[in-house]
Length: 284
Image (cartoon, rainbow, N blue to C red; front, side, top):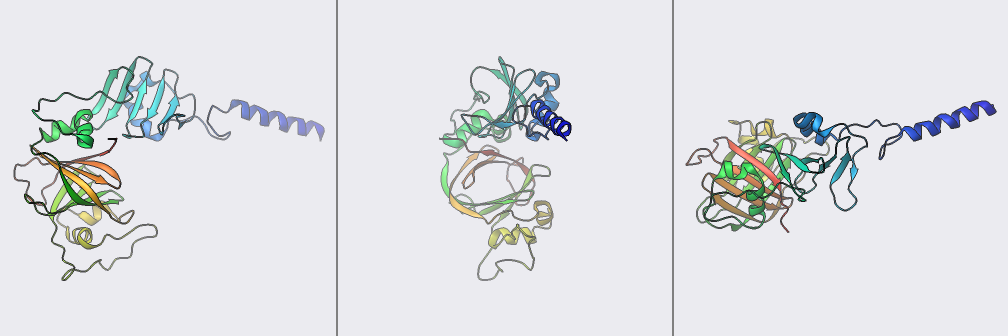
């Protein structure tokens, strides 16, 4: 019995000693899933992880030490990044970018526009290559506008209130191909039902009012099938909108997101599929 107890104690200590930093004793060292797309791009440059992913001590970033450097998942942008101590890489929507210096994010990009957007729109426009490539240069200054946003299983819905120069619009943003469809908001509380005859699964929500009408009736582009159920009730707040040569940026305050809505046709007719991107708003 004494010998058995000694053996058990010894094996327990060995398992604890073999556990990599920040890993549970029964957990092997693996890449944080959000970092995997960057490892597939950089391959041997990133090496192999030598610890489990864990929060950085001085920020909300998640970090993971590797055999060749340090991998990070940026909390502000959601971008997987890596540094070997000299060069930094990040995977953004347009692909892998690299830079040097102390900044944890890619440097702002200089674009040939006479006027630059400001605040959160300016941050996205200057740091995300896709923003300028898709939208072109800004037109009028940003305008404050009431917005409604709702997260779905496979995308978003965003509503922009009526402005002098454009009608109230609802955008259905599909994650399956990063396209969106725009609908005029024709919902009327007098003649339209608040919701449809559907029972949402536990933990999910059926969209209502204008979002619900588009969700039920937008069969031409498969809105309901492609978005799935809503994950939370819609959120209304004071947002902003800015027009560009080839589309629009929309800011939603809750959650804080900047949506890039790029129109590839000049007249932007309703229900024509266009391209969208979403970025966490990091402007302070």
